[in-house]
Image (cartoon, rainbow, N blue to C red; front, side):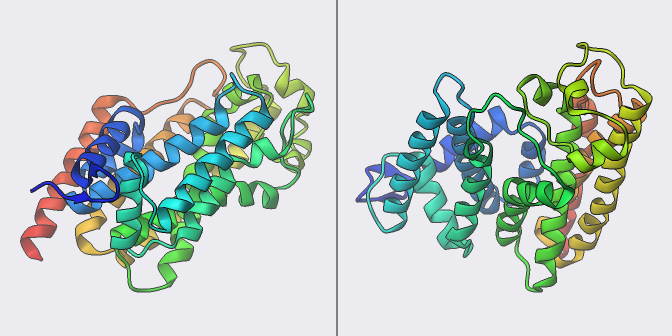
Amino acid sequence: MTQENPTDGIALDQAYAVCRSIARREAKNFYYAFIALPAQRRNAICAIYAFMRKADDLADDESFTIAERRAHLDVWMTAWRAVCAGGATSDPAFLAVRDATEKFAIPLSLLDELVAGVTMDLDRGDTGEPDTYATFNDLYRYCYLVASVVGLVCIHIFGYKDARAEKFAEETGIAFQLTNILRDVAEDAERNRVYLPLEDMTAHGVSLESLVNRAAGAPPTANEHELLKSIADRAENYYRSAEALLPFIDPESRPAMQVLVAVYHALLKRIERADYDVFSCRASVPLRQKLAILAVGLTRMTWARLVA
């Protein structure tokens, strides 16, 4: 039976269907984990992803100035807060996310933090200088907002009872974002963004100028290799928190968590096997490998339901 909020004029199941379509089209690595969730939890995750995607798109739309993008985000967040207060909406993501936050007791403050993360680059202004982070602690704060917060939202949907899960989820998000940063070093540098901490670059003899202006497609220098390896080593340490998190998650959600970690860790392993050459080509996990990981996850999901 179609559910509808009479103040919204849009059916809830239709809103979730739109969010699932956005996730299926855009989520790539995430979507393989979503499939391994029970339907209600899958709907909630897809709704959160659609919300995240819209925030990212508004922040990254380079057809507008930074000031215009910030204004668009402010208007969008004002509309979201009105929906949270019970206002009507025709936005499928807003409707679905409101339902998900209520159903899974997701703190609205986490969504505020998520949007704060995607606006960090905008807050730096348009100076023409590369966007950088002085220390790893500075980078950690960015990673927390754009990735750890997602992990904290996810464990509300996955289900957990022990507060220790929250720190493990936070550090799992750091592992994922460091993996993304390594994969995107070349692409980010072309956009005048450098997410490798300046203190680490200095320690490994890599200058900001050389990274931003390096020849396209050239393999890493010896110093760049060691710099990238140091970031990968940090990520590997944080992946241990992903293993520690698993027992704290509700059994029926664990297969999805295992799929997500396996796909992201496989991406890091491919970067490592390529000897940290993230400049010649963009690292990715082949579809066949993702499908194999998903097959294992679906088997685990079926078993979890049988023994529940």
